[in-house]
Image (cartoon, rainbow, N blue to C red; front, side, top):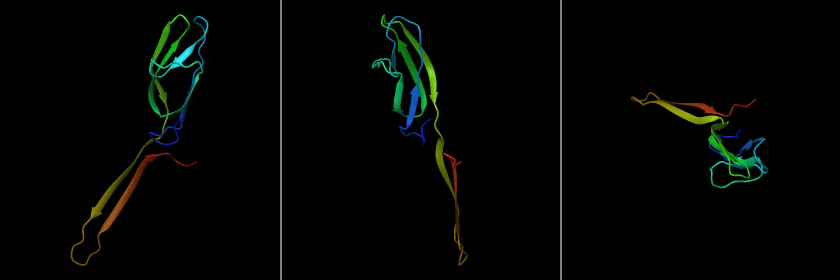
Length: 99
């Protein structure tokens, strides 16, 4: 899971078995690595490619790396009429909640 929406603090660990000889892993289908940990990565959906030494490839379309929802701030304002003060209300939602 990533710490904040869109940042690169997430990680993905994969355990695969079978196939022929060495297993390699990729998130783009081009650049493969022998290690089964991708770290650091952004949260969100990923496509995972797993291949063996013969080039046999398994593609897993949507692996979701968790992340908090996007932080959103909405503003509501009332304008000043005469000498009456106006108000501004900010409401935040989303983001990471504290425990």
